[in-house]
View 1 (tube, helix red, strand yellow):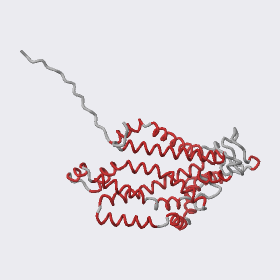
View 2 (spheres, helix red, strand yellow):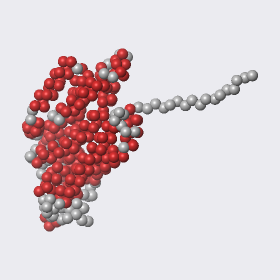
View 3 (cartoon, one colour):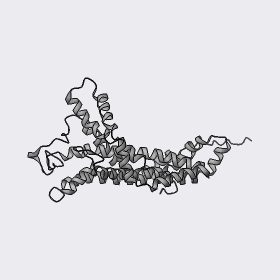
View 4 (tube, rainbow, N blue to C red):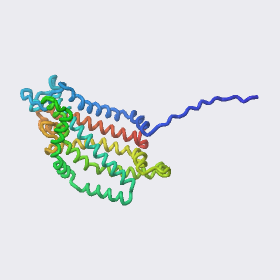
Length: 331
């Protein structure tokens, strides 16, 4: 008598990865998704709408007969004491604030991650030397050093501005095209010293965060397994340790961007950032606070955009932290 053959359907379980799991957790966090959508819409609006010719009014064009107009059909966000359109100035100013936040944070995070990663992985004398340098830099007056460093490299900005305008507009551009290109480029190129000054001095905190995280991850079993396989130190550090340390780094990044925006507003108020008649959200908020009783819309709309960006980045940072750290995720 033959034994019956039982068919067993064996399906291979598909593998997953840290980033796939993170994406799955992030999709469940509605606050983080709302923050991501909001900050994306604001960034795209500030980058795309001002680039469409004829869509927005000139943000620096003064029209005294229309000064102090409340929000309406002709001017959605009203006008200021010089008749300039606030809607246009908010979007054009958003380019500056977003550029300052993103570029400066990128410089800061890049330096801080590399510095802290090497200190945490090498340990011993290398760690001691690198972190003592951080302690020395912490003792320096941050704002004064930023001001001095910015002033030192500021003479290079005029040459950079003209080179960028000639590159974008072309040699055969007429005066109107050159002026339009200058409106786009000059506010950003004049802030290059600010980008470098803030970025090269604001990495100290993130270096300490990364150092502690790398030391924690480097003691785990999978790192010992990678060493036993004969993998090089750089591969272990950048392919195994740092990807498993990204949670705190990303959270700190999302919190650094609005902080840098606020610092840019302080420096612009001191005359070291955005030069008139150009503006940023920080400058618009400062100007609106001086006239908030008579023209409250001058303060409301820039503050609204800045606050939405701030809260969206905070929600997104919290969501990314939970998504990248399974221990803190609430599934």
